[in-house]
Figure 1 (tube, rainbow, N blue to C red):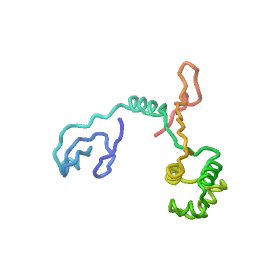
Figure 2 (cartoon, one colour):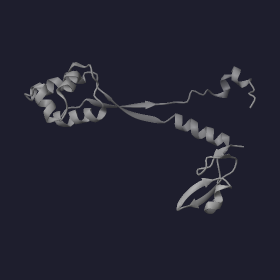
Figure 3 (cartoon, helix red, strand yellow):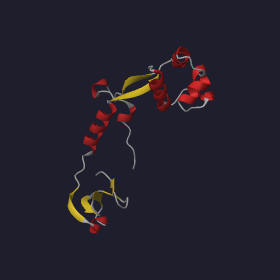
Figure 4 (cartoon, rainbow, N blue to C red):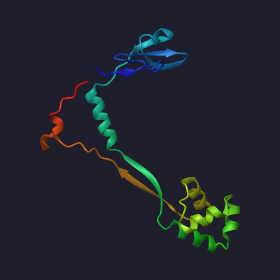
Length: 155
């Protein structure tokens, strides 16, 4: 049987009930259920179903925003084409001129909010979206046995 925690007291138990306590619906143990109105027993998925859900989550794609490799050069060229010094540029975007210098020399990667601010002000594109797909490393049973298939753990 699966052990689960009460939303109210944190107690680990095998069965929970859905209850409304102080206007909030919670999954609570039998001890905490007396503090509210019990609606129904909580139906939890079996361990096998939970594992299947976990595997599906692992195969999802994730979009990540990253700076382009030559961001420093792009920023510097655009700033110079606008006729701005590093100090003037820093004042206009409300940043320190030392920060602009470090960004343009490539010794400092700007955080995404600052990079977006630079994109908007300069009218350039220095952030790219990359999609990363995560796949389960679990192999099919048809591929044979592993040592883990023969080990029995004591609990």
